[in-house]
Structures are given as C-alpha cells and as structure tokens.
Amino acid sequence: MYVRRKHQPFSSLPRRIRRRQVIRLKNLIHKERHRCGGVFYDECDFNRFDDEPGYIWSWSDIYFTGLDPATFWNAEIITAQVAFRDAVHARAFDDAWERLSEPQRECEFKIKTRPDYNASGKIVSYTLIPREASQYDAFNGLTFSEYVKKREQEISRDEPPLFYRRYELLPGYAYGSGLRMIVDASALSQKAIEEAIADFRLHGERDLGLSESFTL
Image (cartoon, rainbow, N blue to C red; front, top):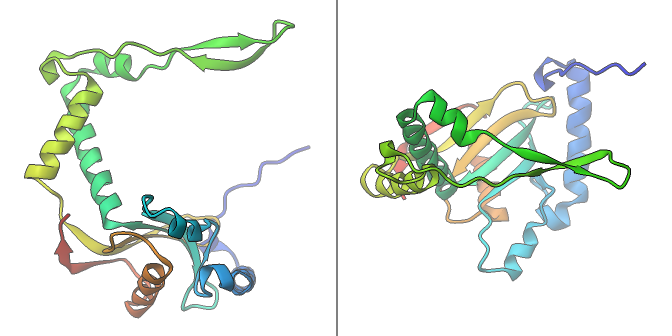
C-alpha cells in the first residue's frame, strides 16, 4: 500500500544525512563549473541571456554550500527591480481588495469551467470560461485589474517603497535551507550571484537588511 511520506524540513535531518547531501551538491557544482562557474549551481541555462540582450535575467533559483559543512542553501535570488514590482503590485492589489465587499470579492475571483468530453462521453479536462470584467463604483467605474494598474502607477510615482540589499532565511524547506536574496543589480549574472553569495557568507549567513537603502 502506498504511504505518503511526511514532509520533513532539511534542518531536522540528522547531521550525517545533511552532510551527505552537501557533498552531493558540491560534486554537482564541480561537475557544472564550466557552465555555472564553480560557486553555485543553477538549473537555468543562463548563458542564453548573452545571446538575447533584450531579455533581462532578473530572478533565479540557485543552490550553494554553506559555511557549515552540513548546510547548503536553496535560494531564490532576485534583482531589486523585481522586488520593487512585487511590492508595488502587492500594495495595489491589497488596496483594491479592501475596497470591495465580500460578495464582490467572491464574484470577482470565482472561477467557472465547463467539462470537456472524449468520444466515449468521459470527462477528460475542463476549460476555463472567460467572464466579462465587472466595473465597480468603488473604483470610479474601473474594473479590478484597471484599478490595480492605476494604483501601481500612483504608488511607483508617489510612494515608492524603499529597498535594501537583503537576505531572508526561509524555514521549513525539505531540500536545503531556504533563502531569499535581493541584490542591488540591474540584472543577474554569474558575477552578480557570486558576489551576493560572498557577501552573504561575509555577514555570517543570517537574516540581513543593510542600512543603505535604495529606491528605483
């Protein structure tokens, strides 16, 4: 009988098992050093961005070893521009959400689908039914998405959030120790990632929001 394995955080594993996983990652980083440089591992083929100058590499999921031999980091690394857009959108979305009543929220985000049948009459999939966007008095006649875009522009212009080069530890990851890194760079590169890893290690591999804030 199939038994679903319970999620177990990496930090709760025995040290010998964690060290074994670190060694595996070290071997993978070494094996892929011709592509990733030998400091971290990234499944993304980021070299393709060199051939596509119009496409900006702004976020990635990377893995690198920690100062502790039984630790490695499973990290999301993003540019400040991505963090800025995420924060502005979240603030605008929350503003729009608060202005609607509970029935309006349910209507706005209710998903309707229709079943798709095969030749024998069996349901094989479902197709999303598009709905006409509603206009709201609370938004002066705008739809939800129109109001969110309007607020994003206003927030970016009038209330731009401050950002810091930041490292945020994320607990509970099953593979490695979770980490979110915000870097003050216009785009990611092998050099930018390596510098961020070196700085993270220099500051003791801990939560950090440095005092030198920057706006975009």
